[in-house]
Length: 311
Image (cartoon, rainbow, N blue to C red):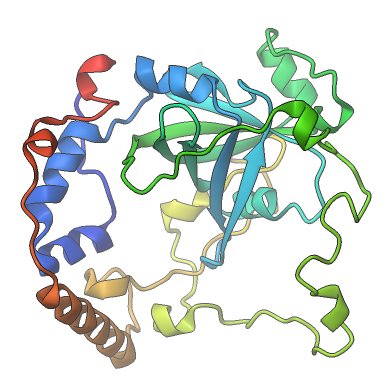
């Protein structure tokens, strides 16, 4: 079924117009961006052992992280819903904390060893207790490894699914289990988790206390505004399920659009316009120096692994 609206953000559409890539982007949207997982995508997800996860809190502060498990740890519940388990970690709960304020997330699955291809999945998340998840989906396996027993699950309502092309993905090989040793799933042993590999703890006594600015991303927002009921954040995913009546879910400080995407609020400063103009001018100057490349015959014919016709 065709999408009811154009994929992508207002910001990316505007930059496409400025840089002359709209036609190329429209071909990608039309050929590759789905609002569900087709059959090939579902098969791809079911055999993956890792993915990269992007979340942001209500202020737009971002976090990216890595998730891993045995093949099938990411569960395809239906063509518009998937779920993944949250195992025992360092206790920070950065991703779950972000999702509790802002339900939007991005997932990138990359197969480095077999297909050498990637799949992007963007959508809205909900956090569910393990017992609640198992009551709703009786077929979920019980993992025998204690460190891989889910404490929570994140279910994702899929809004976009599309390919990540192969051309820059390295081809890796698995090391046999007897050579790499056992993984320390769920361990609290600092050394087995990596210890102070980057020397951060050694610097702790020398650095000032870490504080995030109270007015975050102000250089891009033009200042924070009072909440005006923006639906983008009113749906922030309550932890452990719940519904609209859930209390304690934070509402968003309204942010001004980057790249001059139009008047969606008041108080937009001249600084934002200057920043956008400077950024676009710099990009356009770099692109003007780039040499255009003609696609090869193979590229002209190629329609992608996850073609709309497969689902």
